[in-house]
Image (tube, rainbow, N blue to C red; front, side, top):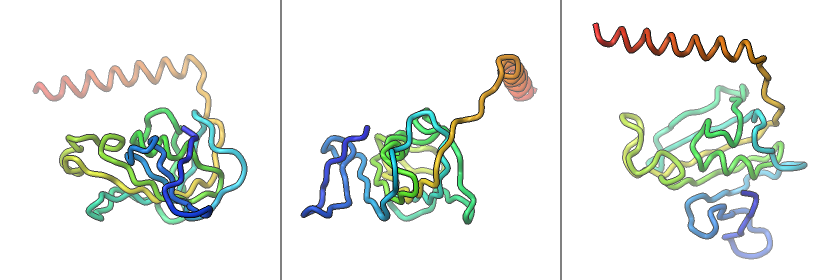
Length: 158
């Protein structure tokens, strides 16, 4: 979703509705970036602060130590994924995300109440290709996860 629709007045508007006029995802650019926008599937390096609409903090990157995740793969809430895909390297923006594109109408008990909008302040430090894993290692990790899950479920029944 790389379409930007200005919601402010005049030619220097820096607030954009990224949800086709529905107001479910709004981006406010605090500082411009450079170059192309981050491609889907890249390992994003971001500094961020996340808050509920009430102001309660959801999470924050530690100091100048960026968080890394593959963008566009559902590793973060949908609105943040979509928003980051519109960013350029070095850009800093605030994303206002409705419940539908965040934690849903039901929230995420016990930390996130029902029907909460969230606000993320994000700086995209850069990106790179995610690490690759050979097929044998991937298979061993999958088997390990299955065994761990069976062990965990078995320990719950005792």
